[in-house]
Image: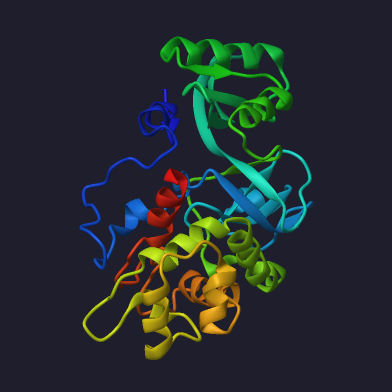
Amino acid sequence: MRLEYSITSMMRSCWTMRPGKGRDRGRGKPPEQAQAYHPAREVTAIVLDYFPEGYYADPHKEHRNKPVAQALGLRSFLLLDGIPLEPVDSLEYVSLAREIERTLPVPGPGRVREKTFKLACMPGADKNIYCLPLNVRDPALVRLLAETIESENPKVTVVTDLRALKSVAAERGLPDKILVVPRRPLTFNDLSDYAKSVLEEAVKKVIRDNEDVFVEFFNIAEPINIRLHSLNLLKGIGRRTLLQLIEKRPFKSLAEVKKIIRTDPVESLAEKILEEIRGEAKYYLFVRPPPGVEAPFFNYYEEARKRAKRK
C-alpha cells in the first residue's frame, strides 16, 4: 500500500522538517535548499487571496477547480497555497494541516481496486496526529481508512468531522480556520496579482502582531563582515545611525527604535522581508533563499523568536 507524504514521517518530524543529507552550517552559509524550502516548517499563515471556485493558474492542478487560498507562513515567510476547509478572508490568520494521500485496496463489484484518499492531518497538543478524510462521504470507506491507519500507528486518529479538527487547533491555541497545504510551496511568481498587491500589508501585519520578535532582532543583529552590519541592510540605517542603535541596545519596543532611525521600522523591516521573499536579496536576514538562489542566510527571524519566547 502506497503512502505519499507519510503520516509516519509526520510523526517523526512532529510537524517539523525531517533532516536532509545536508544541514545549515551556521550563519552566513547557503542553506540546504531542498530541506529548507518546505511547507512543514509552517504551522500558521496569513491569507493573501481566496478563490471560491479555484485559481486557473495554480501550479497545483488539483486546485484549479476547487476552493483554494494563497497564504504567507508565519514561521518562515514561506508562500503557500491550499484548500481552506471553510471560506476565508484576505489578511485572516489560519492554521495549517498537511495534505496526505493514502492508497488502499477497496473491495468492489467483482474485484478489489486501489483507491487513493486525501486527508488533512495536523498534530495535537498531545503530540498525536489527527487526520480528517477529505471528500470521502461513504461511511464504510471512512471506517476502512480509519481502521487501517490507526492499526498501523496508534498515535494517529482519524476524525470524521471538521469540528474535531478545529478543536485540535484550538487546544494548541491556533487559529480556528484550517488551510490544507500540499507538499510543494509556491514561489512569488505563482501568486495572483491581488496576492502580490496585498503581500506588503500582510508582512506589516505580521511584524506589528509580533513586535517583540522584531524588537529582539534589533537587539541581536551582528556584523556580516568588517565593512557591513546586518542593520545596514534596512532602509534608513547608515553608519552613524548604526552606532547609535548599538549604543542604545537593548530595546523594548519598535517605538524606541523609531526615535533613532527616524523612520518607521515596520516599513524598513517589511521592505527587506519583501525583497527576500521575491528572491532579490544579496543577504537574507529573515527568509530562506528560494531554490536555486545561492546567498548567505542568517536566520534572524528564528533566533529572535526563540529569544523573545524565553523572555
